[in-house]
Image (cartoon, rainbow, N blue to C red):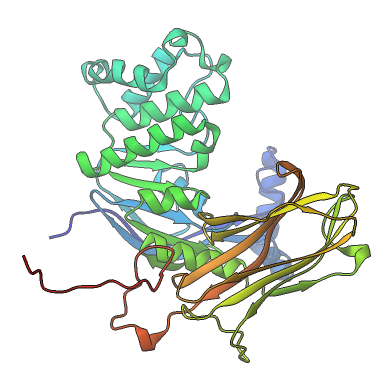
Length: 412
């Protein structure tokens, strides 16, 4: 039997853009009267109305870590503010079971004139905890945050990093049933981010808490979340397994790009390197430019070297659409007086798994010195080959090599 701790039913949120909340009651009241009784202004009123959320419905179970992904302006932060009771929905209903702790921006819920110690007790009281409960968690909060030397300093004197360390520690250690976290972890350093991800994992699997996590770091969402929701233009576009959902999201944002050609005057690059063409050439050409797991293809590129260097090397890097590097192939340095150079690399069939990928190219001299980095210059899809597939689940891993694997009876 499932235990639903968050139930969102047909939630919409409308904002009215313009002069309302001008801080002058007479102006706001006058504008409200005009909009209420002047029918000729309907078209104007419609233009100043923004629906940040549109009929959003979903449920979250106890112990889930739910990731919210989507472009800026998709409605993620508005939804979190509604869940945190900062604002109310225009339509629909939200039901929450248990204590809710939110970290939506640096220092959420902190009073700048209070010390770190005082803010810990203040936030605990807001969550409905008794002093003895907060004292029992106090040392863990301070130890996790790493701000022990400054715990009796007003938090308005904290750096943004110290702020977010303490704010996360307060939210994560004061026994919330539901922890809501926006993109604020981007403020912390890499070590702190890993600590936060580990703590969220422990809250979910070890303590049965529920976490709502918003991030543009797709790798963090993939590794941490048990389910993800893709939001677009205020609505839920799709939900499901984080990895497959993120691949769909990133693929939709960046289209297949198998060939680019430029004239010298508008070619990408800089004073040292100008890239004139990049192309993926499948060995089997179809009208649909289809590459499946069995298809070999060639990556070719042409560039102009204006650096004056005659010791040129190139790195060809292949990434998954979510940013994991599959390989980084180095060319041997070429000593040449020619300014026009051509690169070529053959990727064999039965190597890549089905999915979305992109290439980047590093142009350098003397092996290590960067001349130009052409990021995301080619993008392509590798399709499954149904003739080779006995099931419908995607094979594990990023590569899918056709190596021989022998099995026989053991004769001992």
